[in-house]
Amino acid sequence: MTQLADDITSARRSRTAAGLLLAVVSAASFGLSGPLASGMFATGWSPGAVVLARIGIAAVVVAPFGALAMRGHWHKLRTHARQVLLYGLLATAGAQFCYFAAVATMDVAPALLIEYTAPAAVVAWLWIRQGQRPTRLTVAGAALAALGLVLVLDLLSGANLAWAGVAWSLAAMVGATSYFLISADTGNGLPPVALAGAGLTIGALALGALALIGVLPMHASTRPAAYATGSVAWWIPLLLLGFVTAALAYIAGIVASRRLGSRVASFVALLEVVAGVLFAWLLRDQLPGTAQVAGGLLIIAGVVLVKLGDPPPAG
Image (tube, rainbow, N blue to C red; front, side, top):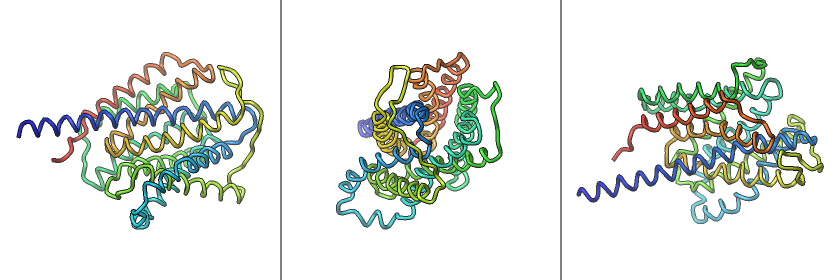
């Protein structure tokens, strides 16, 4: 009996370790998107064109594998069609479109800060809807992570704030919250690659529709994109955006959320901001300051406290 209990404990630890690793991979992949895209913006690409190409490429890559994973189980997709539709519209297209709409009217830093209140929204949702009251460690971890986020985004130096941008950022936060909650749902029986493929496809179609009616301005260029490491052909960052910052990021994020739960996964995702700062340093030669480094350490400490405060799985 003792051996069985030890085996179960060991399996849970292994599952958690794998989940944390995948969550970090997802956060780092998402964090690469901003510095990569900024090099394309400088050549004439519009944010709408970049996000549509990014999601579209990822959908083409992931959807076939999702279809293979669903062979003999298509009824699950039909049964959970509403959830999948919400994932595609809110977690994929909605979060992306609303974030870019926000940064069109306000500074990037406050827009990111508002969007990344999503972990707090996840905690509140789980408390209100499922009765999962946060522990003191969770609250302390959330406070540390929030302080770290303020330092990483350098908000103390002052930033442009517009009410329209705030509204768009809050809408992006809703999309991000839905991403963590739906990704962590293990009850729908959908393989992670199938959920990612369906969500990316729906998201790409929704963004394409917005582009067709003129809501999403589309401008592209074939000029080389310049980075700190040198200039590269325009299609190289575009493929990286599709394969790494979308396809890999979404699949890894879904698997991580199912292993860790939406609460812990959403706080680990704050490392995306830290990764974004590091990639901006490497690719755009934007050196992080002392406050940003300290903020990154606070975010990591906050994530650790949130994980320690997470209730153990039942059974």
